[in-house]
Image (tube, rainbow, N blue to C red; front, side, top):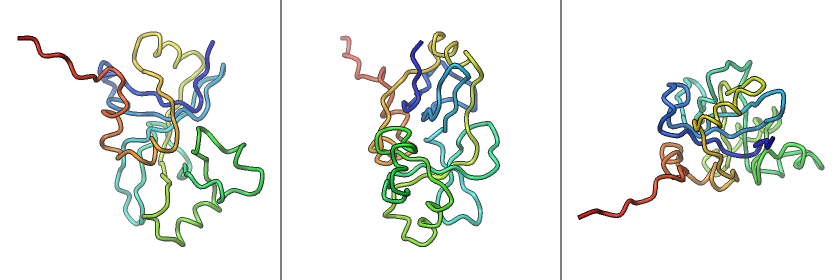
Length: 165
């Protein structure tokens, strides 16, 4: 059975669950015990925080989760362990300190409140039903695409149709 950690799950138009309609999820973990990821294309305003926070999914997390594209923020030898997809790393409290003391407009990071989780076999069933498409993830896609355009730009079935006269 293939596992897809480090890939994007792109919701097909048939997926109408309000939590996942037109979403892109970065899978951080996927194994026989289930799957865990973050909805990466739904920014949401959070009062008092000077940078955007994204809706990571319907499951509550105790704090914020961070993804970033700065391997130099991590201790020596940690970047391989914390890389979740090419050029995308899980952050920690020390990474948050770097964000708060910098001009965040020049940094490549996203903060998330909540996460998406699937129990054993649940994601596999949804994939078999055609709810999701697997798309390779990398930093340029996550940090280079505008969140409100990401779903449309990543959906592989949206090719121009020839006109019929």
